[in-house]
Image (tube, rainbow, N blue to C red; front, top):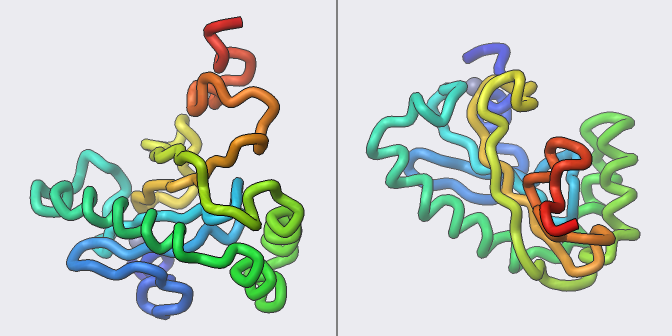
Amino acid sequence: MADCTFCKIYESKQGIIYDSEHFFAQFDKFPVTPGHAEVIPKRHVASLFELTEKEWANLQPAISGVVKVIEATNFEELYQRLIDKPLNDKSVDFCKKMLDHVGTYKKPDAYNIGINEAEAAGRTVHHLHVHIIPRFYGDVEDYIGGVRHIIPGMGNYRK
Ligand SMILES: [Zn+2]
């Protein structure tokens, strides 16, 4: 689709870190943690539920493949490069934060993998993308609950 951010990225071939039959991936320009990447279908579909059976099957190796790329990446070099050639002013701030992040100089300890499935769940670019967010001991005060923290105050059910 002509005015779609992700379709344009794939057409430009800029910053593609993984490329398979049905999916590609890039590092997020507004990273939540070092190595934050997105797995994106090449076909313009908004929803996970629009994937064909073949695309679904291709998603699993895509996620595993992107995790391997993340684990082989030098995050300090990555964010320095994204600061030197930024997408915009906001992306510079996000990438600068990564250089001070506890995870920048090590490999991920864990991952949160997730989809904002439609607008009320937080989707802003309406082309499906699976967030792969590396996690590191010490990146938050209390990691219990993980993705449950999307609703503030409801994450930790042990407290
Ligand atoms: Zn698109």
